[in-house]
Length: 597
Ligand code: GDP
Ligand code: MG
Image (cartoon, rainbow, N blue to C red; front, side, top):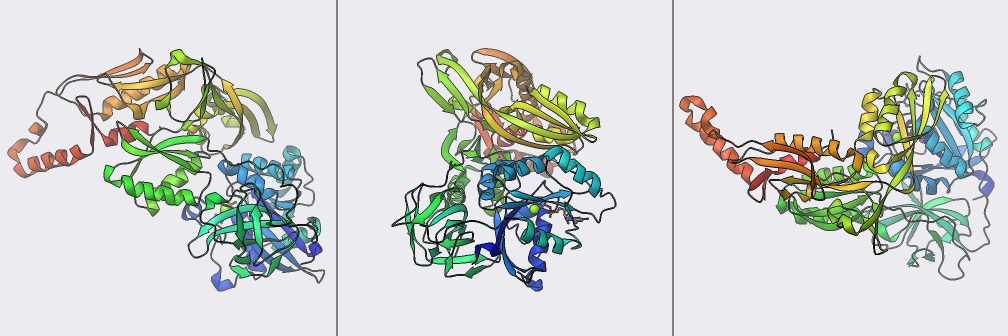
């Protein structure tokens, strides 16, 4: 295809501002999908995406558009993931296209993810077309929002396109703007093949499908190609474009976007950002900036029923085949039995994987408190990457501990600013900036990631009645006064409940944990001390008093069947008990104690 007739773009937006609806409209208006095949949100394919209305994996579609100038253009839309956990994927897919539609809800204005995503687009040198969506709403204020875009982002919004993705108003203007305002891709057809691996996924018929953007050269069906980072060589068995159904094509040239398959066994063998070239006479240098995605949040996943361990292992292995950023290793816990220590890109990623395990594989799981990766520097000069508080070495051998920090951007209406500042302050945040855009404040905080993985987002939503938006990026590691807090029940340590905390917050967290456990552990025939401790020092304590009365005594009136039912219920409950010395703790107590509220 003639380079001058290609336009590659992505859509960036804050969640719910209408990215998917606009993508649907573009597909529909250009007849890419026949009307009877059209279902809402064509491009959001995973269940959890549909339910939450967010895009997790990037999706792509090729649209043929006959423009008003009489020429037919090929428009390639790459729909980037809409969540901060997948920032690395966003930044890679941004580099596969030349421009972005910046969709802003004209009744809401610029939000935290608008900013985060548009900065990624600017980083990738995109031409940006501001699109004001939802102008059909009575509350829409397109002029005010255009001014805000200029103010906050610093780009020209005077010729923003005003649309209603819902009604279809303004969609032809968007298509014309794509053709006339975005640059055509550049590339050299005669140079050796150089293509970027943008995304990959598992297809049960085709195996691993690899999405690429060709920079230079041509890829043809039957070619032998090499992945430069992994060194692996494959044949191109199938080459196709996505409309969004796969349509076979004999070759893809510079500026084009499409997929190929070549008996790759697992998604793990493909690295987003890798450079694809010919096996022989390949290009000289790979594309710059490649780095494999690293998990940053870890937690234990254990089956509620220990018989489910093998099914859990199988399910985890299957999911991991399709997700290179998810890591796992076997873990045993005295409290929870056999399970896995799993690493994720962030909290949403964790939730997505856990949800899929529970839903698609029908498993009941216990998730231990999420933890970040600490750098533990030992006195003997060695360094440990600590993924699990249970592995924390004895403090006497530790020189110092560093934790990951983030730069958080929060946008919030004026009236909630005080609460937001207090929350950030409570979470050991350092304020870096505070500015206003109209009646919304934008605050930038330097925060420990650890304090954010622990229910920060939920708290933020609740203190601002849902009006705050939030985004973050990891900035680096810094030393702080961090300790491991253990929990002891009847003087036995309960490994699944130990956690890393800041020294100043340890007492508070310990007290909350002891109080919770006191309510959750059933009483025994003896007194049970419940303690939180740092090293050998107890910092919080509760005592569960001894049981005196017969449990069946409250079933007065001699109702024998009811009495039997209660005893049966207790017996059934026993199976789900874990023994700690002389104390039995029900599985449900762990689940409830680890729940963050
Ligand atoms: P995304 O999260 O950016 O992909 O947003 P969606 O496309 O899923 O849209 C979020 C919500 O806004 C959905 O309920 C849409 O129906 C609604 N929506 C999208 N565009 C418009 C519009 O132009 N007008 C109105 N009134 N609602 C819209
Ligand atoms: Mg969406």
